Amino acid sequence: MQPALVEMAKGFYQDEINDHLTYQELVGDTQETEFDADMRRIALMERRHADFWKAMLEAQQETLPFVRVNRIRLWILRLLRLIINPVLLVSLLELGETSAVKRYLYFFNHADLDERERTRLKQIILDELEHETYFKQTAQSLGVGNLRDAVLGMNDGLVEILGAVTGLSAVYPHNPLLVAVSGLIVGIAGALSMGIGAFVSVRSQRQVNDGARERMEALLAIDPQRAIRTYQGELMASGIPAPLAEETARTLGKNQRALTNFILPDSGGDNELRSALFTGGAYIIGVIFPVLPYFLAPTALMALPFSILLAGLSLTVVASLVAMLSGIPLKEKVLEMVVLGFAAAGLSYGFGSLMRSVFGLGE
Image: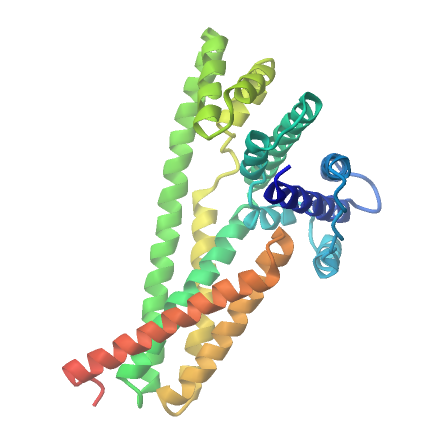
């Protein structure tokens, strides 16, 4: 096996072990609910996947990698499991979830596998598809997908208003109140824009999905085979090999409700008003941190470093939450969000300085 593929297999093994431990942490210690049973089932699924990669690496006489367990992430999950309803974690877990399906498909298409390994890897890919669909449908049906709207809305508010007040600080260095009020005006306008955008987007998507779902249900009732071929075509268009797409479509075709849910998940949990409130409200919270110092400092230039500091700390907290709960490397996610936020601030300050020089503003 090629060295690059061996490294991929080692990475898959490590990921599956950590996923197994993650889902185990979400299982309750007392009376078992339906959610607990699902988490236990998915945890066992991930354990079997890890065993597959372990057996493959051992067959290649490769040394198994040392699995670095993210104990901080597990501790946070355990704490949140006690504080809040665990189903709320579903949306957060989905936030940074990077699909394993494409990476597994690459391995499936390029690795020299025997027939048993190919059959087993096909089943693992099907498991991952079912796993991802479960998380999406659970988050959607419970309405907790709005937590993602809140996190992303807060991030947008932080970055956009940090850029606005930074640019205005360059134009009005001795008038912090003007910068603060301007930042608030821009923030309120941004929150309204984000909220209305979320409302229209969710409402339109729900209407489109409901109409398409009705047509698919009618097609299933009249011509089930045609509906199965439609789904098979969608799987192939997404990059899944024809034999695997055919097998998946044929398996799901035995259960019309399952096939419909896979093609068009029920949008009954979508609520455009709730999505608008979560998105717009979180945006406002993100606005507060970079604007607050301008109400307290005697000059805009004195407020600027505190604004950047508060925004940076807030971005770090948001990035850490997303990274730890979704399995993204913590350092990578924090650097990504903080660097992009500070880059926006720096460019805005430069543009504000240019406008001040060209038009003589703030004098």
